[in-house]
Image 1 (tube, rainbow, N blue to C red):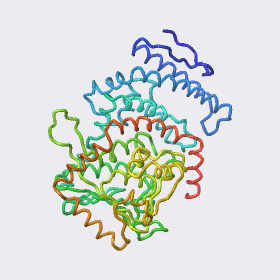
Image 2: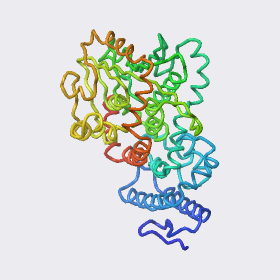
Image 3: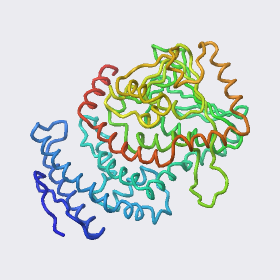
Image 4: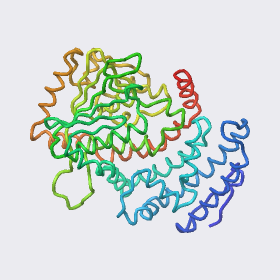
Length: 444
């Protein structure tokens, strides 16, 4: 096999038909190093001329084609090497970091990513796209992708460390979430009161920790998620569920593919659906999973609305509303494109996702997304009544079987494989950079 220059790639080599993994990985490393040398001769992304941007884009395209071809041929072998034959359970961030060390040029190094995150989104090279190419290939593989999903369904080390104290006190206080166990109910309160519970990496970490603890504690039989009381000037003293992804954090370069976008979907959202897993093939009992109830005060925008799609029972105050403005923002609304059509129907899903339709809790179509709508002053009592219904002995078993029937593991895996790359491309697309930059400027 001979390397051949790709047309218009500035000298970056590509491969025809690699004979073995060793040869292919060496040539990938060489091609990636050539690309880095070329990029090193150019100004930072935000300072490049139109011609320099085109030159950088051509170089990135050539080596990304090479990465995609390499992974098409060797994804399972790469994954096996990184996980010692699937005996190690690495989370998405750990897996990408291991790949950077073992397969030079396949994904960005920690140093390269740190350099990216030290700059605003508009001045980044878009290196997370290379992580998206890698993780798409892993998740596309039934063998490797299922193993990665099992790794993401395991309790986090942080939760395991906190579990003894939580079981003793029944309380966890974090920056973004307050968790309290009372009468068999794990009550998760979103408490980013200054930003209307807009999601960032801290909130994803705190939410996964809280969900893990609720699932691990045998005293908990059902979980509740509700927004806390806000200090934001427009909503001071009122509860709010969630304003969705924090656009200011995107603009500042602080929303990452592995630490937020994929961790959120494969981590705590998936745990809400399927519970915890240790991937024990000899297990004869059901995995640790519990029913979940959500209560919406004010609004559930973007990620907040996505979250409702995985709950067993959703209540909303009659003055609340739901929306998924991701298309207007230029990004993909997580797994909502997979779930919303099933829950609410294909036509409404397109209206909400593609056209930005806002659903008022009081309108008839809201009943496709919400189980109960009550006046705001009656929401507390309605929540307690719903929780009582979900304490039944057979609820957990039946909701597990409903989830198995409605969304198979492979359906989610195949969806998230494409999402891994699509969202990485969108986050670094020019229109998104412009939109979130203008939003950040307005709210600074």
